[in-house]
Image 1: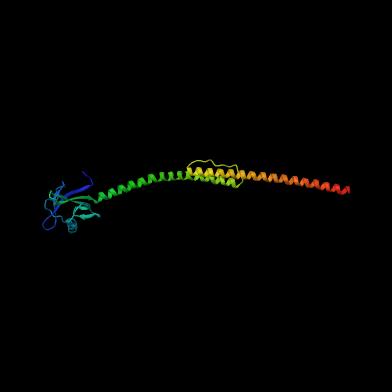
Image 2: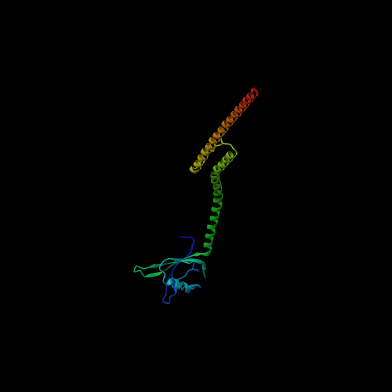
Length: 215
């Protein structure tokens, strides 16, 4: 019922230590192995040694080739009631099917990549703009302050951090404006005092001249 599996069979070891077929699920008489047929693939000796002491399910790491084709195979021991290993279950998947599955997975992965990357880029750009815009506003506000525009303020918004930064900037701008106004007031009063002093000096000079003429 699993379409990817091409061959299903069971093996036992004969007295000579060779793998022999017990059951073959193949329905094509031309490809069917019969009870007692010895497995004669090119890797028979190596496979016999690998499966002689098999304890759990295993699978080949690489494709193997025999008279039936190129396969990716898996093996699992099965046991009788007394715990004695009675045989080995084998499953073969054709290499072409494995490669087709890999290509299919690669195609899906590429489709997923090309479908998600544009959205991820757009989302990243929008998120980046969301982060950068408040900073740009603060930069513009700083330029206004540097140019002497003490009335410029930043609208506090967005994240907590940006809100705190904007509020701090506005308080700093307010403080600078107040200090600038105080300095201007001080300069204005000083100029008034200087003008007053100049007037008094002029009056004093006129008075001194009158006294000199009278004497």
